Length: 358
Image (cartoon, rainbow, N blue to C red):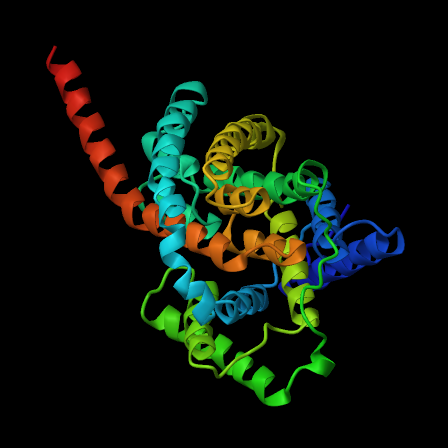
């Protein structure tokens, strides 16, 4: 299809052009979430067809700061006052993560014969980038981890809106924010500053997920101190959706049939298992009156922070409740996964030495 190699700039221009085209098609056909599913579909199909797409680098990372600011602006004194009420629901997160590990690691290890490091980090419901980095440091299969987690995110982002609309009866046309023309200029300037300071400051101190968590922390402080009173404008949220769509689709660039049969199929089957676990915990939360169905579903859906933030905004869910649960899950995975992975490797090594002595 492409007879001569394209430069990095040309590959990114091609990616951006396809994403814009996909958005336009979805918009013209009045399909749902055109700024998310349009670029996702176009880039995914092009990637599977062998197009040499390329992510937009720091531009995509920077777009995530918008979601961090949106979450931070939602951390009002009222939300903070409700944190103790969320305790019972949040307490389920460690059990949820433990069950996922107990189910997922043997699945990847025994069924698909991945090594321990790959099996462990493929099973952990953390951020795609974090799990790939940790897996690489532990000696895991980086490409397999990338495809497995990309498949998890792809399916959740695609299926979750259907569950929300058909299962819970919500609509996907909730106002995502006021247009920029209606927001005070000084507050938008403060938001930009909070995004940049939080992002780059977070990177400097080694904060995981710095592009989201850094701006969230800075904006949360500004919201709680009555400096910021609005979420980012609707146009900014649409840009964040657009970049997420591109990122998911580009994740499949260069995929081979062998990888589809092994890595992608493993991701598909595992995400179905995760869906069952998420449904079970959602049902528990709802039955005990800890949260409404939509909030419980989004809080326990095993997607990334960025994707779940977008969906929560789109359906008008309780963003504070949902993010508290996802942050708890991510903190547990980030802090506990490397430790447990090392313990598992030591145990495996000792077992192998014992077998060798026999």
